[in-house]
Image (tube, rainbow, N blue to C red; front, side):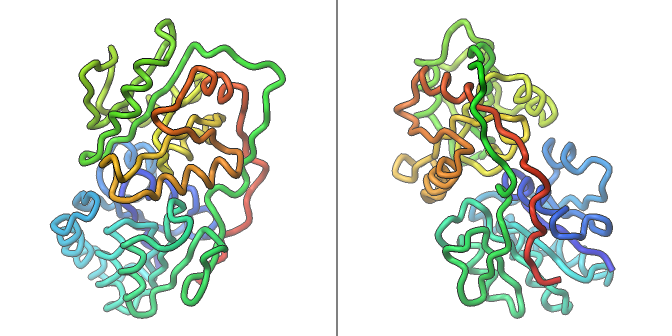
Length: 313
């Protein structure tokens, strides 16, 4: 019987993709996610079921995914469902539980001190098994399984590299722009640098030349590998992409009080990865050229295969 791996695109899909080899299910699994350049590139060659997209706290989108989940799970093909969220997890877990399937929910690494809204809702699904990526809040039904950031380490370069190629990644969320960061970068980034600007829904009066709403996934990965420094919002997917390309990114959290996200989970995420030495966390209004030089002075690499995720099959 097959495992169904469920995640929305963005950081949730990036996390589940990175965790899949540690779950021991990748040889017999099917993916359910949204149709996007990221999912098509990341899951190329694997069996994928595309379901309707749902954004943050999108009730209508979640209901559409619930109807899709009922169709997907009705054939009796799957024995268990594993998800890293977001709302698409609940959409699949409700019918999965009714079919008697095992449901495993792995809370996002962005949630450093407690579960998300989705995590709290999923906890109400009968027999759902719940996992956190932080031992500090593992309690009750929440078990610590490990972290997607296990096995990465940063090393200072013997010779700092000049900052001539920069990737700016502000995310692609439709509802939340990041104008504070874009305005600051327009002011401080070296005018002579070669810059790839991925700005999503962010618009400011003085838009940089060449700014693009979205960049194809493969092109973004190539640009990150070739860059001297990466500046990104503090999303999990962005952090993983920077790490895989060997960079200690300048990592900037969105803040709720500026209307940049629904809460301050990116602030906690930035603190955690900065504590691990894997990013250079900075506030949007404080980034300087010195920060770019410092970030470019480091390289990041894997220290070996991380331990299997501790979960109950």
